[in-house]
Image 1 (spheres, chains in turn orange, brown, cyan, purple):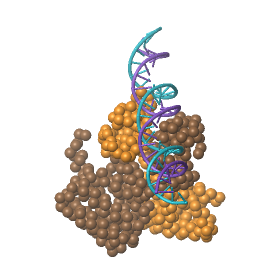
Image 2: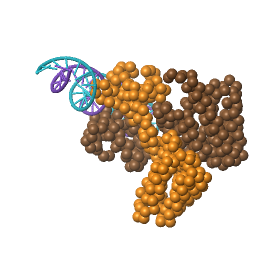
Image 3: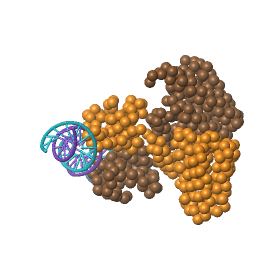
Length: 246
Length: 246
DNA sequence: CGCAGTTTAAATGTCTGACAATTTACTTGC
DNA sequence: GCAAGTAAATTGTCAGACATTTAAACTGCG
């Protein structure tokens, strides 16, 4: 474990970076125990609270886990797919909301990525995933469903489609794109006619994937992209007309 | 700002979660100042070091920035694209390295996503991005280039291709897929013949994008995918033959 | 009155020392 | 030999203090 040169940055940030580099570079293996807080404080020549702040930074990034007791300490943590999903979704959502990304850009990105999955999904989807897609379509067709529930179901449908590719790395990458779009989608009010249209396209996608017809799946997804974009445009127009002064 | 119920979890984790929720939900705007550490300590009824640990957790996620001095404090931070890129790349890299993701899976995911960008890139690429692609191709063709430099250039080429889509959200999503692959790519030793082949395909991609021919770009990318997969397979076979006992 | 320099106050950054809580390992008594 | 109790190691938390940084307030001089 290296020591820090004199620098202007926070000591806890420097120490966190030093340890993080050790983990990322592979110097430390999964489940390996870090030195105790007291030992780290000695090594880096800082106080224990400073070391603790550094460790909390790493814990926030899911890089370590801590355990109390005699054999306790901080351990290098295996980054699970679930943690990575959650990380990615949080980051993506914040990125979209904090940078005023317009609906069109986010929507285009989402569907472009989804269309990358569709051919693979058509090849490999399991019966389970098909069943999930069908179930969500059925849920979406129910009258009286709130806009939010409709969007929830929409996300679940598309997640199943993406998972159908049977590639966890792809699922991880797509999770951010699909889920982060939800707040934007929630801002749209869906009419009866809109939902009918979307459910119909979802059914076409499910049918195509069921039939392992990649081209048909892609075509349906392309239509869904166009339709969603037009809905977003309409919603944005309505919004700007309602509040012209703001 | 809400208080925490009695719970078994770390206080600093609870406080971090409470503040994080306030930020994510939109209760707090960008650049809004959080209460001072002393005030937070009062509000949550904990000590200042505990509050500080919570704030360091948030700082590690780029959710806040701190500033010293009279008008200092912790401020809600706008998550920039750069921060999000860095976040995503780190997470993706760790996910791949810590979960023994095989070359095939990562490679498939990467090229599937890239092919999603190619049509858009063919439409919108700027002269600048074309120039970058050409420059990297030229660099890759130079003899005596180390494998690592070759991979660096490969990443730069593909970044330019992805950026050509002119969709920052797409670029952000792809950054993780492309850059996280690099450590895996670095494990491959490229022969002269391999490089020739890859450079040729890169040139075909650049030509297609230059001519705004989406189909040709997709075809070239598909070939590159196949070729890269075959190289990876060969490398893996060689590796297992060299170390049969481990 | 205005400007420059100084002072002051507020805030984060860091340290010291201590105690609490938790978990394992050891020891002791039967 | 086993079980219960005890000790030790480690993280979690607290209190108080001082250092450092920054901007605003103040003061004195021209």
